[in-house]
Image (tube, rainbow, N blue to C red):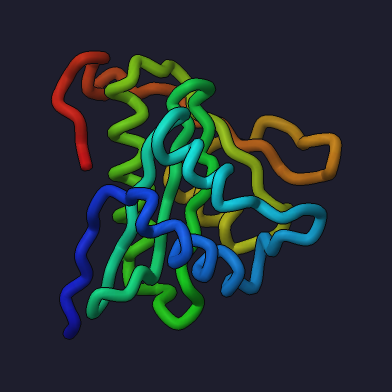
Length: 154
């Protein structure tokens, strides 16, 4: 089995992040394009991102916004689904966001997708809908989460 490497994402990963983002079958971008500058802003100013590499190819990524506690993105290239990469990214990102002192995280995803089931199984609860009909999920900080200023993950 090929070793997958999880590491923090940087601006040099943006092209690969965009490729993975546009490869997915669900939660496809239809209403707008996300620019490289926007991705860079989330990676460097608003939060942090991580990638999974297999044979030096980025096959999955996640980006969390520490300013508002938002899971901005978590996507896996369809060729690499069902290998646990989404779970690894999720757990790393959530653990890091808790170290930023946040009390609640949130995200939105299209209804009826595998992503919605993924988040439910990870302990997120549904908390309404966006004006565009996406489902909103929230995750409250557990009592055992690393306190702000604790050791950062990733």
